[in-house]
Image (cartoon, rainbow over all chains, first blue to last red):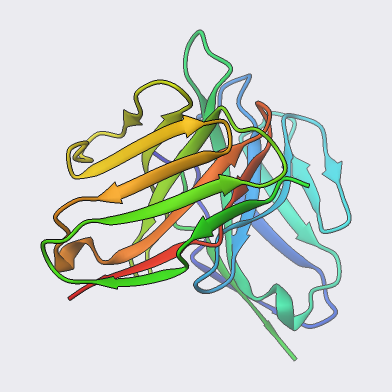
Length: 114
Length: 114
């Protein structure tokens, strides 16, 4: 089961930063936060992931609160092509294993408008 | 790197027949693959974890006899929907784990049972 809560939808003006929040208050110490996005009828696309430090790559930045109970994905300059459903996922790891599974929640539909 | 290919991208079959969907990791070896199902306007639901050389692990509520998974090599996992019925019509997506951190998704297979 998904351990995350996200707003169902958000809007953002093209060229502005899109800040997508995610709550994961029951996250455990060794569980990573992953962000994926899905454009209609395609497979999810990896964006970024982190454990406790803030992360940045060519697509986005991930800000994780100090208590790790929430995080924010930041798309610094949103474009129309960033319109998609964004999923915040806590990777669930089986006890005694290094294998993790991703359980998707409902995600946030981000609409970027011109 | 880390490309996952799914085939076919779409398939229409008659009720009562079986359909096989292939998931290949093209440039890496995947000891673990995952199969998801997604109904329209819903999130991805994890169906099973496919382990190379061993039996798949199914999520609760997923019929293992209906959704047969075979992971015979480090680059190929197959999902066979047996005796398909219209309610099995869905978007099926596979994911491959390259390391304990990376998850790459295929482009999905749209199954329509008529």
